[in-house]
Length: 413
Image 1 (cartoon, rainbow, N blue to C red):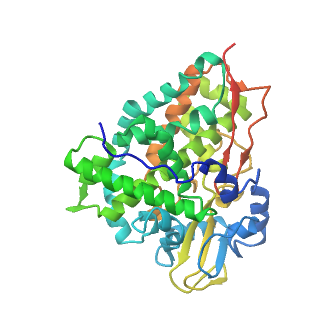
Image 2: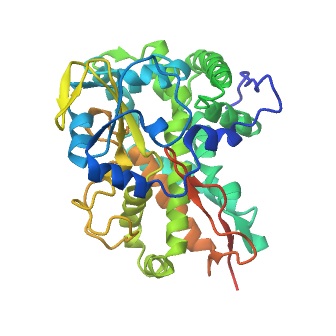
């Protein structure tokens, strides 16, 4: 669809949101031994996750903070919505994505608007996107490096394809993809707070104009669907719709890029498991779930105490913020044997990578489809895939959001 709407770049042309990842989310190669020591000492620790990890403090109001690392307590906080609220996200996500973000809401408001998003992201619709949108994007990106016999799968593939998938879903001009991705990533640059505000404002202006255009001339793109879909006779309020579109690139793009990058890195580090998948594509779903458990892209989630309460014997005053470490629960030896080992053949048990409770990720089906299609394409088109011996091995890093920065490979004879 031709669009008269144009996206605005950052005012500072030298600002690069891709360089803010380490500052915002840390560069720890392996935070899990420290997390395991915390969990061995107590399931709930006083203090926020960021300062405990040595990261710059976030821009939260002055209030008590706790870090939750026990798996039972992680599950309790994520599922007990009477005691623990999502309102804590108003201090970060709400500032840039907008206070209409469903991530900042509790029921009944959250459930009312989430039902509309769920109708659009049902598995049967997402599967159709996999065939009509995801596959062409994946093959288009791969076609640029296939003749070379070598690639950086992060820079040339995983960093680009989930964002381009979303851009195709929105049916927008291809020349705007890079600017759109820069603004989307800039929204979570909370160290450079003014840049995050600028990114959220510019994306808000952009989506407002786009929604108005699509309501006048609707298509079958995601913006038109979101603008016209209703649940129980209600349409999405403007602020909720714009906040969701702002957040979509991060929730469905950034996390999928990280998850796919980690999956490919783990399989290359374990060539026997990669070869098992080559021989039996039916192993792909369990490989994806294992990657999400073993080193999920989002290690920490947030909640706020709605009432004075107690957790594992620790008094939690109302209004306190809780950093809920999903990565700790996903590596709890009481749940998973030898949890630090990547093993696609382990007994499958539910993980915490997509959260739990009413706020479980609404885009989880799309994320799985994108990871599945990407892995199929790698297996189909990159025979003999291996690490490039002339380049450094990948290093998965980050304390809160995990990803390798590069994945240099060779393929073919």
